[in-house]
Structures are given as structure tokens and as C-alpha cells.
Image (cartoon, rainbow, N blue to C red):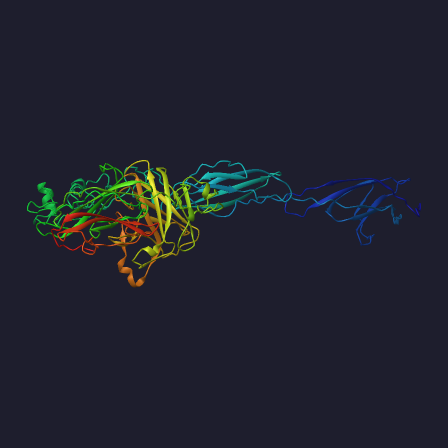
Length: 640
């Protein structure tokens, strides 16, 4: 028997391959060992292995065979192995060959990408919306593709749906809004995908006007019909198509002709006091406004007078005594102001039940440096109308408050840098926006023309201290604005913005000398309580001058009611005042002077009373008083 005291084995070539296990078993690797053959050839060879820090177990070879190469399988990736080979012949075994080592490389599985679709967004109709998936990532590679898909809500058209950012315009929604959901799918460079979703909540905008009738959808009962927006009597027929808006049996046109209210059931009343109801007069097609037995009041006689001074924008017009030949009570007075001597176009036309012999012209009604003509007539309690008085005139002072003529008083102007409507544009750079500081409450206010029919407008903050009725606490004073429209008689929508949030119990109020404080119903507050949107109608709802003339004047303000005097506040759903236009003053003062209270010149005959125009000069606190004579014919007191 031949003895081999030593058997030298040399491993001269090592190869390895990596094995990918696609089942749930552990990931493994293999290695192929090859060595030089012994000479003479032994009975066979044994391969032994150990891990780092361990000893060889020569009792248990890892491989045994006659060839000079072997492949070992099931090695743990990332573990370092050491190998030696021994030749054997029967019970004899050589010493170890040279030791070699091998560490199978670990095989790393691809990590799926992470899709991020962005947080929930809250927007209004018409807003530009961006879906942002740019925060998506892939830890062991790159994202090769993005795909946005809408999964719920009102359908929108996505722009850039295959990009990291997609955009769309928020759609018009119902009054309770809508939730739009979107799914983002991202794919990495190894083909793995990930998805995420996001939601965009769309709220009804206070300024959206789907049918273009200048009435926002939130106030429009017919948001898809440009010819209708209201249904006063709730009969399902819009007011413009309905010829009897109050369902009192008398047509609107007929009521308007004879001075009745087409929005109030006055069928059982007797306007002229002749014992025949208005409805019976309509059915008989007789005049309900004048009894055949009624003698109308005398018209005041006015001597032409030229003012000695220029006047401010809030003059108080004062008439003389009222006289009615058959002793009917003084029920109303109709006041008119025009820039034309023939009154072909009216600046103001108000019929008042309280401003009978004095009329304070409200803020924002008149223009600077303008010649105005005015007249008045009396109406008795049987609706008998006097002839118009003679025409008198006055001239307003030059504009010293707004030297740069930008529609904002110079001392109320605001510098740049504010974006109250949060549209990303400096408010002072927007042609449809007027930004100004309030005289009360240290607040910055902004008024924005929402409807496109407003061609020019001016604004002004007014102190609420000038209003005698303090039952309503005004947070920012009165807010006055004047709208010039491109069409006479049309409606218009504006939004008032506040630099700070208003209280939840605050409302929009208007003040009129006739009716006092009124809650303005045609106003919608934004959810964040930092803006309110109004709809106004030239010559109607919210228009202080009371005439359809292409100009809307609206002094109003945000306020809360004193609980001890809440009964004094009413709700306004029609024009702010049937008369007294601008009784709120806001910068002028309320002066009530009867003919009997006036100081008459010593030279005035005792048989004559004074009929005069009292014009307040608000800039200097002066008053210009013009006297004209008319005979005293009655003793009826002014109803104030």
C-alpha cells in the first residue's frame, strides 16, 4: 500500500455564479472550485469549508469526489467562506491545500418607488388648480413616468396628466360644493409602480356667474338662465317673465304706472282713498292713485337763486310749507336731482315718507365741480300729486380729496404689497380693484368688480359716527362705493375684502333715513369671513340714488346689532330706501329744518314763508342758505 505522507493540492481557478431564487426560500449563491490533480492520482478529493472565525470540521467534508472541480451551492450571500482541498487514499488523507476564500455578493431586490400626490386642497369655482406629484421618489433608482387620473367628482380636463404636475380649472359646482379625487401612478426604472391619491374640494364661489346675468349663482334662482334670477312670489315663474311678481292680481306694469308696489300685495289697499280698492281699480282699469274728488296739494313756488358758494357732496335740500286745499295729510315728497336743466337724465329720484320738507343727499351720489338742478313735489295721503316746484340749482366744489383722480380719497390710499383676494397679484396693480384704509377700525378694505359690466368705480370709507342711530355697531365704519355700468338698469356684482376676519354674527347693513338700519340680504360671506359679495341693481336693489341711470351708489358696512335695540333693525330685500336716499350721511350731518323753525329775514312779509335750499359745505363745515318766497297757505306740520 502506497503511503502519501503529504498531498499538496493547489486551487488554480475559481469561478462563481449568482443564483436568483424566485420562490419564498432564502436567497442563495454557489461557487465552483478547481484544483491541480495529484500525481499519481489519489482515490479522491475532499473539500472542506469554514466561515470566518470558525475551524474546519474534517469529519464532515462539504464535497467528496474523484474530479478536480466541484460546485458548491446554497452559500449564504454576504458571508465569507474559506476553502481547502485534501486528497485521500483509503484511510490516508493529505494535508490541506492552499486556503482560498470567497464572499458571495448579496443580491438586492428593487425597491418600489413612493408616489406622493400632495395634500388636500380647498378651492373655489374657476380657480386654477395644480396637482403636484414632484415629491414622489425612488430610493434605488429614478422615476421614469407619472400618470394622473381623475377618479371621482365633476369631470375636469387635466393638462399635463403625464407630468409630475398637472393643472385644471375648478369646475362650476352645486351650492354644497363637490369633492374631486385624483390618483397618481409613478413607475421606476425597474418597472415597479406606486400609487397615491389626493382630493380637491371645490366650493361654490360667491362670485361665479355661469349664465352671465351679473347675478352670482349663489343668489341666482336660475343660474343657467341669463334672463331670470329671482322669483319674488315663489310661483316658479321668474320675475322677468312673471307679469305679477307679488301675485296680488294686478300686473307689475300697471302697478308701476300708478305708483303701487309690484313686489308687495297691496290689492286690498285704497291708494287714493276713494273707497275703491286698488284691485277693483285695476279690474275697472281706473286710476287708483287719484280720487276724482281729491284736490292735489299746491306746488311750492321757487324763485331762481344762484349759490354764493360752492357746496360739498352731501347738501341738504330744504323746502317750505305744505298746503293741501282739501286738508289731506302730507304723505310723501318726491325729490329729484339732475345734471340737466330739463331733467332728461336723473342723478337721484327718491320718494320719501319721512323726508317731507328736507332731504339730505347721501354720500357718493354727486360728483365734484358739477352744476346740479333739483326739484320737489308733494303727495297727499290720497296719492294726489302736486305739480313740480320750480327748478333750482347748485354747484359742487372742486375735488380736493382725490387729487390724482384714481377713485380713492388721497388720505385713504394704501401702498402696494397686499393681496386681499389671494390671487397672487398685488391688489394695487389690478384695474378692477380699489384698496383703501378705513376711517374706523384701522382696517384695510378692498372692493373688487366681479362682473365685467363695471367700467369705472370709486370708493370711500365713511365714519359711522355721523349716523344718529347707533343701535348697530359698525366694525369698519360705512363703506361707500360708486359703480359706473355699461348698461342702464343692469345688475352688478362686487366683493368687499377685509384685511382681517369679521365676526360670525356680523352682517352687512345699510342705513336709510326712511327705514333706519337694514340687513342687506343680497350678500354672501366667504367661508373665511374675510370677504362678502354683493349683487346690486341699477335703480333697484342696493342702489342709493333710486334711479336707473347707469350708476349704482351703495354705502353699507359690516356691523353687529345691539341686543337692546334689535327691534330697530329690519331686513332689506328691495331698494335700500324708498326715499331719503343717503340718509346715512356718512360725512355730512342730518339737518331737519321746517319752515316754521327757520330764521326768517326781518324784511320777509308775515304772509310769506321761506322756501329754501340748505346746502351743507362738508369740507369747511359751512352752510349756504338760499331763500325764495311763496305764500303761506296752510299749517300742516312736517312729518318727521
